Image (cartoon, rainbow, N blue to C red; front, top):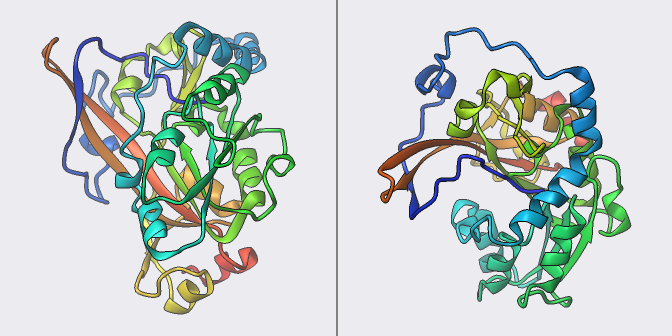
Length: 325
C-alpha cells in the first residue's frame, strides 16, 4: 500500500518547506483550514455495513487503484535519505550491507531511488498488500534480485518472518502506509515488523498529519471514525497526531542502544506513540513536517502536514516502561 492523495493538482508542482510548529503548538492549535479546530467533529455518516465492506474489499480496492494508475501516480521519493539521515549515516559508518524492509512499497517509488544511491550498500525486502503493485516492482528495469526481494503481504495478518529472517532487518520504513490501514489493525502491523527487526534497529515513519490539506477536503459523508476517512475509490486514509516530550536517564539510553547524549523522548500520549510503546518500542523523535505544495500553473498553494517519527527496538523490551519517568 502507498499513499493516494486525491487532492493531487494537475500541472507543475513543487514542495516548499515551511517552519515547523513548536512542540507546544501543533496543527490542532495553529493550523487553519476549511473547518475550525474549535468546531465539533462531524458525525460518522458511513454505515457499519459499508465500513465492513470497505475492510473486506481493501486489497481489491488497492489492486484496482494500481490497475488504473499503473506506475504513473506517485513520484519517486528521492528525498528519503535527506529526510531520514539514519540511512546515510549507516552507509558512512558501517561496511556491512544495510538490510532494509520497505513495508508497503507500492510500485517501488522509495526502493528504486535507494538502490540507485552509489554510496548506499543496501539490500531491500519490499512488500505490499497489492499483488499488482508487486508485479510492477518486479518488472521495473531497476529491479535486481541480488539486491531486492519483493513479495505480497497483508501486514495485518500474514507473518513477515515467512519471507524475512527473524531479527534480520536493520531498518524498517513505514512511509505513507499505516494511514491506509484500519486503526484497529495498525498495532498488528507494528508487532509483525518487530519480529523481523534486529534489537537496536529502527522504524522510520512518515504519514499524513491531522489538518493536512487532504483531511480538510473530506466531507463528513466520508468519515469512518476519528481522523479516518474513505476516498471515492474505496481506499482509506487515517491522519496522525503527535504526543509530547519527557526526560529519561542516561542509563536508560545506554541500555537501549541509543546515544547517551540524547536526553529527551516522547511519551506515549498519542495513538501512534502509544501503539509502538505497547509493542516494546522506544519513540525517539515524533514531530510534524510542514510543507506547501505549490502549483504555479494553477496559482495554488496547498498546505501539507505530515508526521515523521523514529522508533527504536530496544535490546530489552520489558525494561522500557520501568526506566521512563
